[in-house]
Length: 605
Image (cartoon, rainbow, N blue to C red; front, side):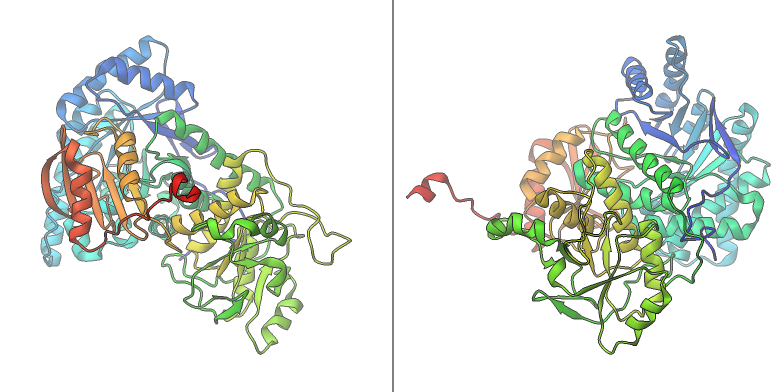
């Protein structure tokens, strides 16, 4: 199965155009940027104001939650108010659980988003085996619930997103396909077949997950399946990483998931989901798109090669273990962080105080062999050597980073560990053989972060890479922090607490930003523990995916606590919930006391 035309050559996937109001998605249209308002849908004026703010920030399509019939009915007043104020941004109704709310919302908006995992299914986490006859009966039931919405969308000429979420697959799908990318794809295709049977084609797919590896695999598998089904299955795709969280970590995780797919030509509209004010999402999304446009205009590889990895299932490249600067790498060892000598010298005096962001290997002292992966003779020479070598791509070549390292991994024997780089830039220094005269940094750290995360993160999710070097950022401390945070976001090296936090929306039952800050303040020392912070039951037990513990809004002012996907504490007053979460973590043996901070008086004495 092929998920893109050529993984070494950028070419955007060809799709049909789907119109969402006055905005075209897919076809020859640019990649579109979306976001979602965060206020209560019943607050008409706030909904109008937040939508206008998003439109003014450059958001091209705005989504509004409609979890109930009263919310769906109020969309009429929101849309009317927007149009009266000259705001023509298309509105999408976000539907969960209630087909009747979808039918009401579809009267007023330009697009309806449904989740196949909960649109016509009650979520019970029931384990049962379905016979073929029982499974067919379930599909018939879904068709009966889903067909009226298709008919209304067809009549009104409005669009639909069939949006699968990794954490909210139906019991039927889970029991037949498991909690897998394949299950995500099949869940969406079941609904798409119903739409096509009714001659409705104005729909868009999405395959969202909080784990970038799962997300990437699901989108690739979907594209491969659509290609197999035929040229008229060329529907556009909406990209997003769910529950990415906030701050730098969220931007890195979004770049890994969204950026790597865009780099392969996959994706027609995107949303960067941040636990921040919605307008903050727009510059990040635009920067991701601009990065890909630079890639598409850069030198393109016309090479083709059989990939060294399975694009639909993660497995780390099987290398031999070697040792450099007293650190082991390769095999099942930790993926190491490499720095240039110049940057090491800048932090050498404070390494003992750098905590988790320490440099591990110095490039110039690690006997790293840099090659142009197009030079077969150089690769053959490496493959002929008896001992495993530490190999990277040379900087002075005109290939995109992802293509260059994929080509290297395909040609180089798997036993040789590979050093990944975020950029291939610079010029040979005549005063130092093999050394760079300079790495040209960008003044915009967001661009640096997104470029490094897209390039290195994509390759890590391909299973390629035993060490990484961020050389697009001059400040050594910032480059080291970025290196480790990319490893954490890609799930390649967990060195701190991992948080899964949903973006705010009208369903949220508490202030996500302040609550997330409180939880982080109490738990950020728990290395390797994964905590999900969900504003409501919709983004609750399912969306938490593989989190160890969950903090979920259950009712206004009340919180439910989870262990995995199981609710264990109910209706806890919000004022007590963070302390009760700490108690729950203690009960399960994953709590440690934070390191005691030395005071100034103690230092003086």
